[in-house]
Each structure stands twice: as structure tokens, then as C-alpha cells.
Image (cartoon, rainbow, N blue to C red; front, side):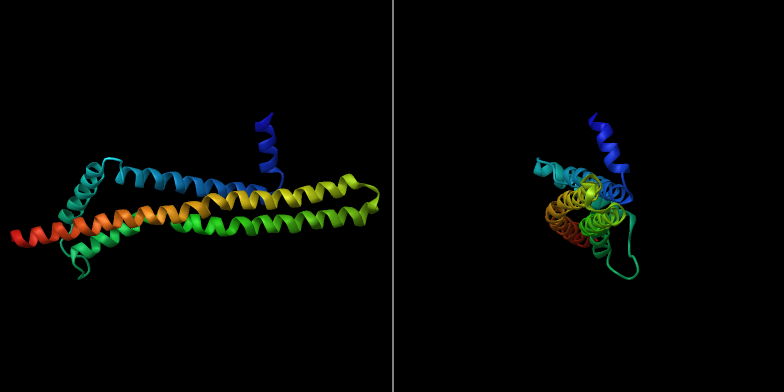
Length: 181
């Protein structure tokens, strides 16, 4: 019964389908980043740092000089790009969801005015349907946006913590390799 109601809500109109699509995108990227960051920032501080060191050593071993920039700078930039994957998707979907909700509100009010124009004010059920649609899309737009608004600052903070480790490890690796040469 509840699944049927959810499917009806999703397929009721293209605005709600788009909102649920945005919600899926936000949650997909969010879960991906949480697992990635969780793996690198494990509870055991040494395990997370060891993983970062191993990946950086492998990155440094693969590259010598990339485009004239020192390997350590390229390594740090690569890590930063890797960690920021999907941030733009979350930001865009979070910004678009309330706007789609507002579009649904306007659409629902237009449906209400059309019902009033066709049947007069004698059929409140037709007016209630349009108003209900308008308020529902506004609600879904806000609900879809909230997880992204909460997640982005937390993900940025995790990324900064990992990047601090990457910079430290890269600097130490490059310094030790310079001293060994």
C-alpha cells in the first residue's frame, strides 16, 4: 500500500519525477563519498594514515614529472580532484530541488485556476487537487534539498582532513626520497 502510494507520487507529474531523480543523485554521491572518506578516515588513525601513505607511495612511484610540475604537487592535485568527485552534483541538485518545487507550486496553482475557470467555484474538489499538488511539490523540493545542504559542509570538512594528511605524507615522502638520492 505504501509502495503504491510512493510510486503514484513519483509518477504523478514530471516535476515530482525530476525531484525524485535529484534525490537519487544526491544520495548516490553521498553514499559513495561517505564510504570513500570512511575508508580513508577509519577509526584507527594508523590504519587510515597507512592507506593514504600506501596510495601516495604508489602514485609517486608511477610518476616522475608531470607537465613540468613537481610530482608532489601533481599528487596533491590528483588527490584533491579524486576527493571532490560528485561535490558539484550534490551542490547543483541541492540548488535545483527547491526551484523545481517552486515550479511545481506554480504549475499546481495554474491547474487550480484552470479548474476554477472551467467549472466555476462550485467544485471545490478540483481546486483542492491543484492546491494539493502545489503544496506537495514545494514540500518535496525542500525535503530533497535538505540532505545536500547538510552533507556538503561535512564532506568538505572530511576532504580537508584527508588533504592535510595527504600534504603531510607527500611532503615527508618527497623529502625522504630527496635525502636518499
